[in-house]
Length: 458
Length: 153
Image (cartoon, rainbow over all chains, first blue to last red; front, side, top):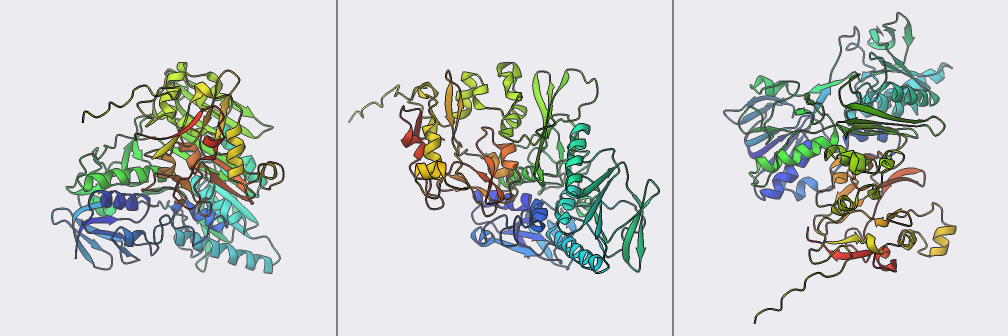
């Protein structure tokens, strides 16, 4: 068969691209293909699902009529894993043998789990990653079974989570409601190594401990103890053994791009794309976790596996694919993370762990142990470059705006950092400009009419 | 679309807009009952910032390219393509605060409602889904410090 637009991947980047394409091209045929048998859902919501904060009915990211309304043909199910791409022939081949010829193709296949070489990890049936809805449902099933079996034996049920990144810790939180003891292993010397600093990690680790989640930074598993296809414990890197009823493997992710690389696409740490998000292959675009992004703050090139980034890239790639003359370019981005654990909220953005003694960089840290809050602001060359806000979320987007706009902080009331930032911390001109987009041109700042329309000559 | 604009030159900081917003978004729609008896206590979606010398009432801008919508992981935060209204669906929201980290104006709050953390924001006093109404905060302002005008964006 043939499609004008073939979108590989049915999550944030893929559906955002489809929407953008349809906004420009009302009649071109669009196919979305994905091996997951579900309509598009909020992928980061899988832990919330297990906690009962959403449901299978409400987890849908788009309205029920999304595919129909936009005239998109969804090919969803285990047979629709992209296996081969022939960029010259403009043809993709799927795991069930289906071939689709396309006009333009979008690679939005996201991340897949990175499985570390831990002996026994891939031999046990009671080990699951925690990336997809089906992974989450399996984790819940394993947790329910573990609890029933353990309680029948009169002991506590136990789970091990390998990896204390965002995925591992959200998985730990989710299963902690069903399992008596959860241990989280992390090779790095602190939890959330990519999005927190040492002090913030220490505070969060203490909070998680009060909810029965024991984090073991600096310790990982060297061998999974498997018996008859079932993991019943792990030998840790500190030489001790830890028993468990099941394991969540959340060590890390990598871009799901093997078929594209095989087809000749240039890959660094992700697919290398131009400002229009076209890969090195003609008429093959990419968006979301698979793309190598230039970090606007530290200049590094790596995938930015975050939902808002995937939505933004999908929108931009879709417009270029449909030849929208006003399509914006993608010129890098920076990480903004929002996550909550039990009653704690954690927001981080940009540069949070600058190298020691980096020139022109200062860190402004505010800790209130009694209130359980921790705030860190990284200032570089007089501009905000990053923040960590633990339990101090209010109005954080104002800080994000300062980072994005590279605003010189000397024009702003320093009180901005003492507590929730406010619009009135900006000077008069900036305050007005920020809050008055689209303000009628014939009104002044007091709301008075400044010019009258000329009566028509007739 | 029509947008609410703050005219800070006229703002007295009286917070009548906040009271009107709470009443509008209460169960009883009765100011006294809404402010003294209702549980959960209604939340104002307009915030008066500042002090005696400078004050202004800040409301969701219903941005043309809303960052809260792009960031939302649940699909709860949406912009209606016809009216331009940006709303958050409390049934879908999980309270992750991505919108809070994205909104450049501090116009989304996450509050606990009936045991669930959800995002609350200005809905332009819409009554049924996506048709903006007549904002109660603007009607309540005694000094022309909040206006509701057709915007040029």
